[in-house]
Structures are given as structure tokens and as C-alpha cells.
Image (cartoon, rainbow, N blue to C red; front, side, top):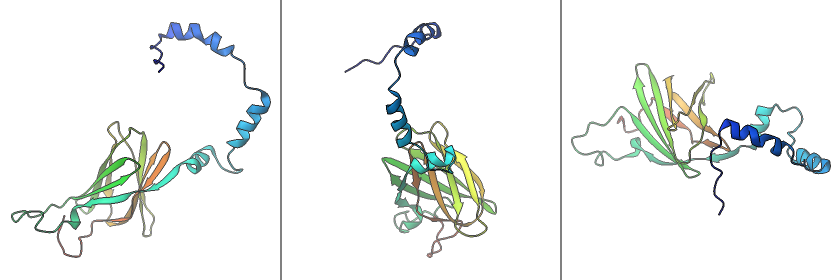
Length: 180
């Protein structure tokens, strides 16, 4: 097993740079074949090409506080106005909370699993099309404010994956009328 290189100071790194630059390039034919293998289809921007390479994965709902039976909440419980949903995909759990905030709602969440930088996009399924976006912070958390009631689909845009959650309701009570 190889030990990682110790951290280098700027001066040490600068001293090693000429030796690295002196390394021979791969043969020109190999370079052309490698570039041709990864060339984006004509007409796509760099961002569109990166999106095309992203693996799309559908998350699975593993918990919904609206699906709990009233007895599971306890006899004295009055329920909560905040809905909690937990989804699972690709070794990650996505904890999602939907809370009332006046006439609108706040959707907050956290991605639990491998550390990834990324962002979330919450898209409405009904016209007019609305998309709410937010970056993931260092703890994998995000917050979307002033979300209008409706049916939405949330996508996590991570380094190599796009994790898509099944559509869910924001702001509508379940059929039994309980807030959950």
C-alpha cells in the first residue's frame, strides 16, 4: 500500500514543477483517440455535456409522516404541521421537511451519505412551471423558502449523479385530514 505524499509547501511544489513539466506527453495518436472518445455531441455546451454524463437515479420513499397511523403518534399527540419525508438512493438518505410559513411553505432537507458538493432543484408539475434552487452546504443541508402549494419533484444534482425523488405534495393535507 502506498503512503500518500506529505503536504508540500509552495516552495517545495514550485521546485518540483519543472520535473513534472519535463515528463513526456502521450503519443499524439493516443491523445487524438482519447479526445475523440470523450468529445461531446455537436451543438452541446460544456454544461450540457456534463449533464449528459451524469447518472440519473430514482430515489425510493422510505418514510412519510403523513402515512403514520394515528395510534403510532400516541393518544395525546395532536400531530405536527411539519411533514417529514425520507428517501433513499445510491447509499444516501435524503431527509426532507415541509413546514408552513404563512401562505407558502419552507422545504428544508439534508443529504446524508457520501460527501458531495451539489445543489437541489424543486420543480412544480403544474403550470406555470416554477423551479426553486439552492446549493448544498458543507453538511449537505439546503433550504427553499416561499414554496407555493402544489405537486413538486425534487432533484439532487451531485458530482456524478442526479438523484430524482418521486413527486410529492406541498401544502395539501392527506385524505384523512390529519396534518402530519
